Amino acid sequence: MKIPGGPRGPERIRPGLERILAAFEGTGHPEHTFRTIHISGTNGKGSTACFTDAILRRILDEPVGLYTSPHLFFPEERIRVAGEKIPPDDFSRLTSRVSAVSRKVAATAGEPLSYFEEMTWIACEWFRLKRASLAVMETGLGGRWDATNLCIPVVSVITNIGMDHAEWLGRSLKRIAFEKAGILRENTPVILGRIAPSAMKVVLGVAQEKGCPVLEIDRDLRWDERPGGRISFHMPGISLVRMKIR
Image (cartoon, rainbow, N blue to C red):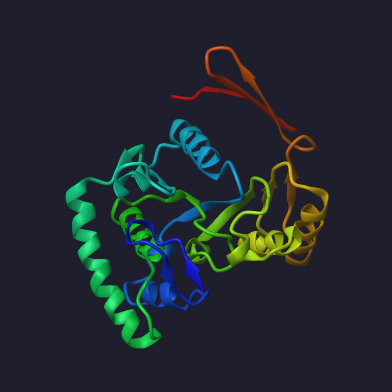
């Protein structure tokens, strides 16, 4: 399968988690040292991730990680802890480390890590080094075979589902919904955005199979935009939360 490869250009890889799993296993499982809020969807993943990160940094007294993609100018933009980008020197050092890891993976799995898999390893290792206990992780492509899907979520989020990356995820909305619902974990809550009925049926089916408590936007959750860049967020049983997005 040929996929977008970031700065290296398109890459041809086999869908699967074998490569990134081998990388994590060979380096002490950095992805298990923190829990995640895992975000998938066709649109709005990045803004949802940044919004969530901003809230968590205000209410938690511990470092929070953030992993998004793609970057605008520099790859360091993808990886943040406590709102700060990974410093270039640290990024360079971890890039050298993951290159060595990738060569070992190629020797055992038959092919090296993809660019996104390398970036995911760097993010997880940086979060481990910075002792983040929670990280907001955005999927790169789909969900089921995404490198971020080896992290351990406390909640999963699917913003919406459209015909994105159909050449890789499937040429029907139902198939794409199944791929994105691949981030759901047994008995782990999932928050769903505004999703077309045919796709929602697929996601709810996966959620039911895995025993996931479901919260839906407009039914269980509601938010309103206020003057001055403020957001009012409403949830049953929880008092109103207001914050200003910086």
